[in-house]
Image 1 (spheres, rainbow, N blue to C red):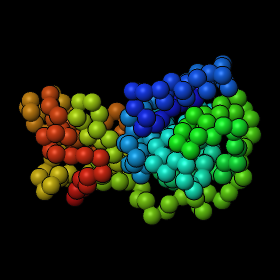
Image 2: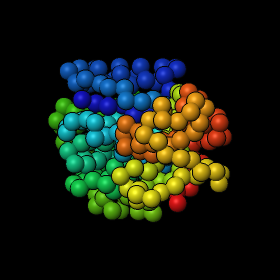
Image 3: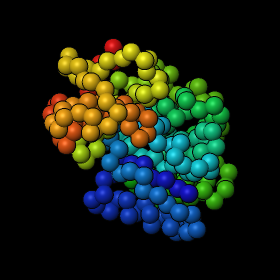
Length: 241
């Protein structure tokens, strides 16, 4: 299958155009819309979010990832195979966390160029056709490179920042709960946030943090909007003590 992970949003023609290209190029391959509200213009935060989601998909899945504020500029296109799953998109850090955590990694600098290549829509013209090729079993259209030359090694394994805010105002942090020590405290702007297992363990209107369904630290308010109540946006720091 091909899995779409973008910051395009669902308004406008962009997601539909991706589907149209994939339908023509790989008509028998199912396409899954994982999310189109990844952190806009923020490949760093999006990288930690994507890495938390890939394990839900089978080996052989092709992730078409586009969070690409540098589209049309000098950044390369990338093709990766990480632990049996494929990733196609811009070489701007979006796949770095997946690559860093992988046990098996291969990386290609994309060389494919279509007859039509818009300066502002590489998702449609470049990355979607290559994703279809990979999903059909074709060889990666690129030059193999040593992955360490591409990974931004200064990025931490866990990121103590807001990486996503969902429609309820729940706030995901780029930290896996399994990476935290037993005795740990979270704080936002110096105010401690208690831990709970689920929403019903705290009073209505109270903030808490918990291990979300993807294994990440998430801050929520029972029947409320944590992002609004705590004044948090993507990129804000959350203290872990």
